[in-house]
Image (cartoon, rainbow over all chains, first blue to last red; front, side):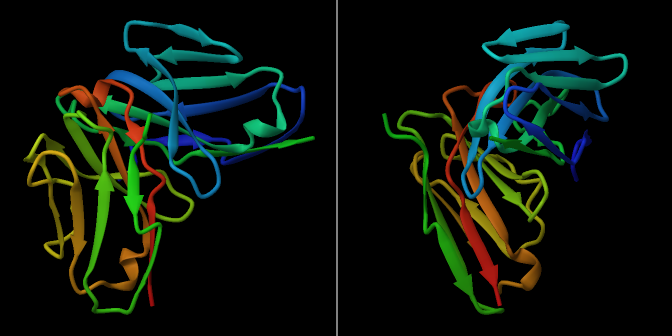
Length: 112
Length: 116
């Protein structure tokens, strides 16, 4: 079963705008990761945030983590058409450190 | 360098047929994972190998699913007597780390299985 849910399920924005996606999860975690999946292709790792971190940046990406609410957000600034993809959060639950548990994903469409 | 490769990329099977899906991980990667991704959903864990040892197969949905990695490199996921509910994309991922859940995993492009 999925670890949690992401919202929105789908998001459509214009190039240059910011996109925010949220992820909620169910169990205590060690780390949370975000992956991108382009249509018909495998997943690509974007960023990892550890449970003792609250915020992390990588280029145009900003991730926050609130372990008290069991939630995370991914912000993509100054979006580009090439950012069009599905975005998934993934956690490794404490006591089950050898697998990732994925959320349901957000489908982002960036209109040129 | 070469990433994770999977073959075939597409497979159509008639209900009841057996299929074998291949994964070539990145050379030297200790950990190998199989995930199943249904249409419109996130990937779901099937099984995990550390070298040739299958340490976790808790996600395999039935005894029709079998995975192996006999020499600690290439892995094969076999599905016997395929059913329509087996239709999905099967993703393989590898990692150079033993405790790979807390690290980046490198995914292949997947095999899209359609059971008719």
